[in-house]
Image (cartoon, rainbow over all chains, first blue to last red; front, side):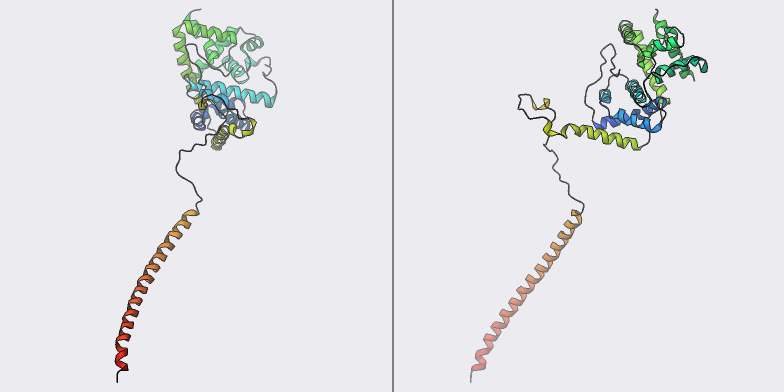
Length: 150
Length: 166
C-alpha cells in the first residue's frame, strides 16, 4: 500500500533516515499530514499519536531523498496510518454505507468521504450507492475540480 | 478511450491517492508508459493535489516535534541496545557491510567536563599566582636579610680586635 512506484524508473529510496532527515520531513509536511489525519480521526489526542507514530515509522525512511512527489507519498502514508489506527481503535473498516448517503451531500463529496476517509473501495461505493464504477471515479475527479475552483 | 477522456475519468486521481485496485493500478501504469501526455498530467496532478492538501494543513502542537525527535533518536540507537543478542562471528565481509556494531572511533579531540570545573580551575589559577608573588617576595626578602647579616658579621669581626687591645 505504501510502496510507491511510478513507471519510468521512479523508485523510492531505501536509505535509512537520520533523525535530522525525519525532522526535516516533519517540518515540511507535518501540518499537512496532521490535517489529513484529523479528517480521518477527529480526536486530537489520537491524531497526535498517529502523527508521532508516522514520522518515526520505518515507512517514512523511504521518502527521504524520494525522487517523486514527496507530498503525495506523505498524504498516502498519513491516510494509511490514520485508517490503521481508526480500525484498531474503533473496529473493523470499512464502515457500512447507510442507504441514502448520497442524498445527504453532493455526490463528489460523499464519494471522496467514503473512499479517502473511510477506506471504502471504489467497487463497494459503486455497489452501495447503486452507481457505475465510472461514475464513482468521475465523482472523485469532480471533487478535486470543484476544490480547485473553490 | 481517448486520452482526454481517460484524464477526466477520475482514475488518475484515485491512482495518485492509492484508492484503486491492483488491476486498475496496473492499467494506469501501462497507460502512463504508453501515453507520455498522461504521465505529464499525472505530474501536474500531483502538484495540484499537494497544494490542495496543504490548504487543509493544521499545525500540530509544538511538543510533538520533540517527541518525534526523541523517538527517532531512540530508534537510531536501538540496534546497539542489546549487544549480547548476536554472537560475534568473524567474517571476511568488509567492515562497511556489518551493521550492529558500535563505531567507537572518535574523531572529536575535545572532552566535556562538569560546569563546576570552570570556577575550580579559575580559583586554582588565581591561588597559584598569589603563591608565586608571595614566594618571590619572601625569596628576595631572605636574600636582603642574608646580605645584611653578612655585612653585620663583617662589621663585628672588624670591631672586635680593637676592643681587645690595651
